[in-house]
Image (cartoon, rainbow, N blue to C red; front, side, top):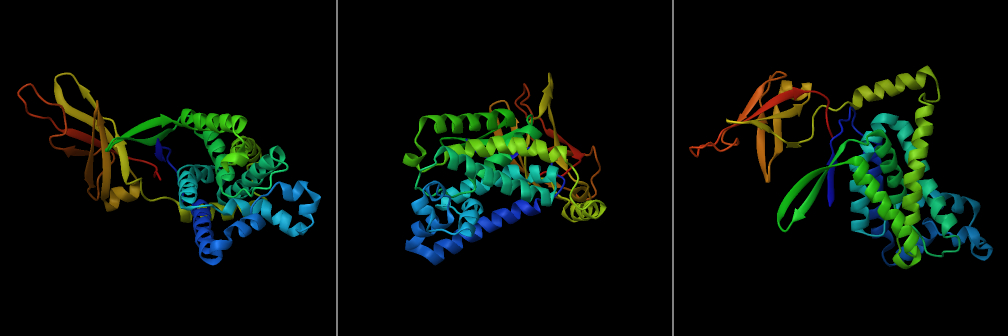
Length: 334
């Protein structure tokens, strides 16, 4: 199963989330090009190595600053392209909604705290391991834990490839993320992380601490700095407000007996209603799933209709009805 996106609307562009993705990609390329064959040594210095904190003979080679810095730096390093891609894709899917709820600056703090907490979880449960741990997985697990609390009933658009046919299914977030957490916990309790090279307990700890930190952040909703900080937050939100819905939308039309016409809804923003645009829609009807390009004419009103000729139900005489898409003007989606 490959998650494509969630279906929760977000009001603002995820400035911090995109910045985190950019930093991770930049550092991966910079380290790869700069250190090349010495990557193992680099990872040992800037990755999280539990033995560096538990074994005095090893700890003596590192200063306090180096030890403290590794608790943060490890979450911005990755061991390979697929490791980086997988982490950044999950961060892209879930991070924007958590940032939308917490605000840009608090989201950055939340992300870092989740990463540090996941590192401590791995460190405590693998106290004498001399294998460096790198990657943003623990911090991202915290984002996933927070998302599950914020949007348990949202849907995760998931691609299930069946041979060469793309099959899109919307899975409730509570099941998708709950299943993911269960798999991490089972792996952590049954597999030696040193043997696999995967810090399963960091995933588990990040997820649980993400849920805990979210509760704490929501309990203290105000930013430090009083009115000045709140005004800054509002001004930033005005700049980062989304203008468009996602280009790909899944539409599940409904039909009525003896009526060959199918009916569905397509969501656009006020900006798109004025300027027009193009959408790729995945029409799901029974066992049939088709992709179509839909043109949104400029100046369309809320409740306006778009007709897809020949995409309805088949009549008794062999002719095919149409699909009517009702335009709903609402919040942007990522």
